[in-house]
Amino acid sequence: MAALGALVKKAWSVRRFVVLLCAPLALVPVLLSLPPKEGRCLYVILLMALYWCTEALPLAVTALLPIVLFPFLGILPSNKVCPQYFLDTNFLFLSGLIMASAIEEWNLHRRIALRVLMLVGVQPARLILGMMLTTSFLSMWLSNTASTAMMLPIANAILKSLFGEKDTSKDMNRENEENQASLQQNKLYTVPTEMQFLASTEDKDLAEEKELSSDALSDLKKEEEYKANIWKGFLISIPYAASIGGTATLTGTAPNLILLGQLKSYFPECDVVNFGSWFMFAFPLMLIFLLMGWLWISILYGGINLRGWKTKKSNIRVDAEARAKEVIKEDYQKLGPTKFAEQAIFFFFCMFAIMLFSRDPKFIPGWASLFAPGFISDAVTGITIVIILFFFPSQKPSFRWWFDLKAPNTETQPLLTWRKAQETVPWNIILLLGGGFAMAKGCEESGLSVWIGGRLHPLEGVPPPVAVILITAVIALFTEFASNTATIIIFLPVLAELAIRLKVNPLYLMIPGTIGCSYAFMLPVSTPPNSIAFSSGHLMVKDMARTGLLMNLMGVLLLSLAMNTWAKSIFQLGTFPAWANIHPENATSLVTAVENVTLSALNKI
Image (cartoon, rainbow, N blue to C red):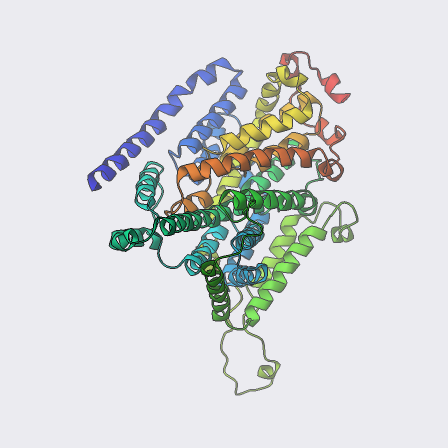
C-alpha cells in the first residue's frame, strides 16, 4: 500500500510538471489566431485558468502571473497591474477575515453554536436544522472551511450520544474501503474515526446476534440503517449549509468580493452593489434555500418520516435524545460564564455588521451621506472596526488602577494580537482576489472583453430569464471540478459582455453566475467543506452525488426566482443602466470588428 501511495505521488508530480511545461506551448496558437493585444491577454487568461483547474501551481502563485506576464507581453504596465492586488475590496475582505480571527480566538462561535442547538431541541430533524442554521450563520462571517471544521466535532459528539459508541452496520467495512479509494484518488486526507475503529470489533458480537429471533434481527437492522442514515444526514448538512450561508454577505465568500471588484473595474459608475443591498437580496435567498435543503436532507436520511408522523418513539430513541441534550448542555457549561472578551467581541461584531449594512442601504440615506460623496466605502468601515480589536483590552478595565500608585504596571492583552492575525488569516486569498482583479483589468484595457462580446451575437436571441438559468447551471456544474474563485474569475468578463449583447442590466447575469459558484454540492473535491466532511469516513461519493444533484437543481431554480422577483427592485434590473454604456466605449477601435453591433447602437440602449 505504501508503494502504491508513493507511485501515485510520483505520477501526480509528473503530471504537474507536464502541465507546467506543455500548457504554455499548447496555447501558442491562441497568440497567432487573434489580434495581437487581445490574443496575448487571452493567452495569459487561458494559461492561468489551466493552472487553476489542474493546480499545477498553488492557486495564489498562479494569481501572481499577471504581475509578470502582462508587462512582458505588453498588455499592461506594472504600475497598473500591481495596484489591483490592493483594491479597497481586498481590504473589505481582510477586515472580515480579521474579525473572524477574533471570534475564533475567544470561542464566541462555539458558544453561539451550542446555544442554538440547545434552543432547537434534540430530535434528529431539529438537530439537523440547528446545525444548518448555526453553520450558515457562522459562514456569513467566517470562512466556509472554518465554519465546517468547527461544527463537525460538535456534530460527532452529539451523534455518539444519540447512537452510542458503536455502529454495527454490516456495510461499514465495504464503505470504508470505497471511501479510502476515493480519498486517495482525490488527494483527500483521511481522518480516523470512532466508527471505523469500532467496526473492526463487529465480529465479536456475531455469535450473540445469531441467537436473536428473525423479528429482532429485522428490527435491529432497521435501527442500524436509521442510525447510519441520520449520521450521514448530519455530516452532509454541515458543508452544504456553509456553502449556502457564505452567499448571504459580501464578505462571506471570495466570489462575492470578486464580483464587487470586477464591477468597479468594468463599470466604475456602478454603485448599486454594496454590503447592505447585497444582504437584502442574498439573505432571503439563503434562508429559503436553507429551509428547502433541510427538508430534502431530513426526508432523504430519515430525520423526517413522512409515513410515520404518529408513530410512537422507541424507548431507545427517547433515551438517546436525552443523552444528546445532556452532551450539548455539558459542552456549553464547560465554556464557563461569558467572559468580558466575548462580550466585547460580540459588541464589535454587531457594530461591524450594522455599520456595513447602514453605510448606504439605498432605500434610505445611510450614515456615509454625512461625509463627502465617494470617500467612505465598505472597506473603510470594516478596517475601522477591526483596528479597535488590536488595542481594546480583553479584560474588564479597572478605573481604580489609574489612581493606585502601587498597582503593578502589567500590560493588558488586547482582544486580538497581530501574531494571532498573522497565523489565522488566509493571506493567500488576498492574492487570489488580486489576481482576479488584475485579469479583469487586462481584459478591459486590451479590448479582449469587447472581442469576446463580438463572438456572442448568436446568443442575442436567448430570453434573459432562460439565460439566467443556463448560466447558473453551467457555472454550478463547472465549479464541481474547479475552484470557486477561479471559476468566477474566468466567467465574469464573459457574462458582462453577454449582458450588453442581450441589452440587459449586467448584474442580471453576473450575480447569478457569482452565487452559482457556491452551489457545488455533488463531489467531495468541489469545495474544502465537502472534502472535510467526506474525510470523516462516514460518507460515500454516491451519498454526496444523489443529495447534491437535487441541491444543485433547487439552487438554480431558487436563484432564478430571486433574480426575477425581489432582486429587480433592489438592483434596478428592469432597465439597462447608464453606467453600463461606459464599458463598450473603452475600445472604439474594435467596434468595427463586431458584427451587427455599432457604438451608436449601444449608446441607444
